[in-house]
Image 1 (cartoon, rainbow, N blue to C red):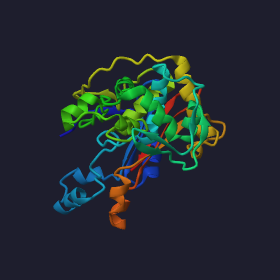
Image 2 (image 1 turned 120 degrees about the vertical axis):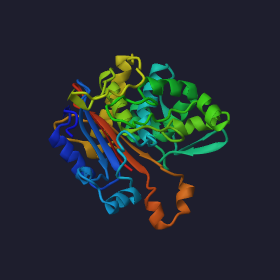
Image 3 (image 1 turned 90 degrees about the vertical axis):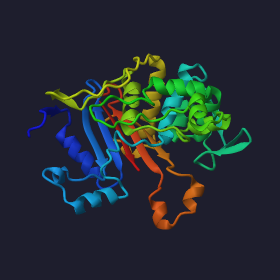
Image 4 (image 1 turned 135 degrees about the horizontal axis):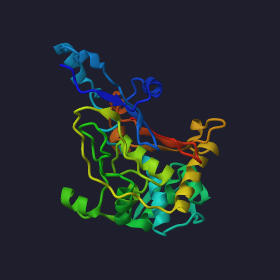
Length: 338
C-alpha cells in the first residue's frame, strides 16, 4: 500500500556529510535554516538500514537490533535527552544579562575552584583562568564564573529563562516520540522526589549538569534564538498529503535585548576564532560562532568503579553548537557524540 506523499526539507548533500562524519559513533547531528526553520540535516548514530523493514524483517535481524546496547532504533536527535554541559553557559550568560545580574564588563576571578555552601566546586582548569569577563568566561568555558552567576540568579530565574529559549518543551517537529527534556525547578523536585531544592544544586545546573536535560534539536532551536533573536518553528516536511500534524505547546516568542544577544554572539565568535575551546571549528574566511561542551553521563565516582569495558560506555558526552555566518546567520548546527 502506497504511503503518504512527502517532500522533506533535508539537503541531501548535507545529510550525507552528517551521516558520514557521525559514522557509528553514538550521537546526533541537527542542522536547520534559521530563516525558514527547515531541517537541513538530521542524523542519529548508530543507525540501521530501513530497507530491513521493507518486507518482513527476520527474527535474527530484529533480535540483533533490540540487543544492540547502542540503541540504533532510537532517534537521538529528538528522542534522547542529555545534559547540555557547558553549552548551557550561553543560556546562563544571557539570563544574567537579561535579569540585570551582570553586564558585559562584570569580572570574576577564577583561581581554579570556589567554595560555596560548604562544598568546593572546581573549574575544569586547575590553575584557574584569572580575571574574566563574560566574553572571556564563554571563550574559555570558565566554570567558576558560571558557578557564581548561577548563585546570583537562583534556580527560579534559571528555570524561567531556560523555558523562554524553549528548553523543557518539545519543538513540535513532525516526528512522534519527541522528548520534552527537563528544566528542574523547586516545584519539580518537590513533586517528583518529595524533597526541597538545595541551593548547592543550583551551582551544578548553572554549568549544564545536575538533572537538567535537553535534546539536540532543543539546543539547536535555542541557538537559533540567540543567532537571530527569534524562535524558528522547525519543520522536516515541506509538503505533505494526509499527514497528521504533531502538536506541541505553543511558546511565546522570546523578546531579548539585541545588545545582550550581541554580547553572546561575539563571545561565541571568540570561542571559535580567538583560540577558545571551539578553535577546531574555525573556517578561514567564514565567520563561525559556536560553543563546545562536555557533560558527564554518570558521576566520576560511579564510573571509577566500573570495568574498563563498561566505563567506555559512559564516556562524557561531547557537544558543539554553532551558527554561521556571524553577521547574517543562515544555518544553525548542534552535534553530540555520546
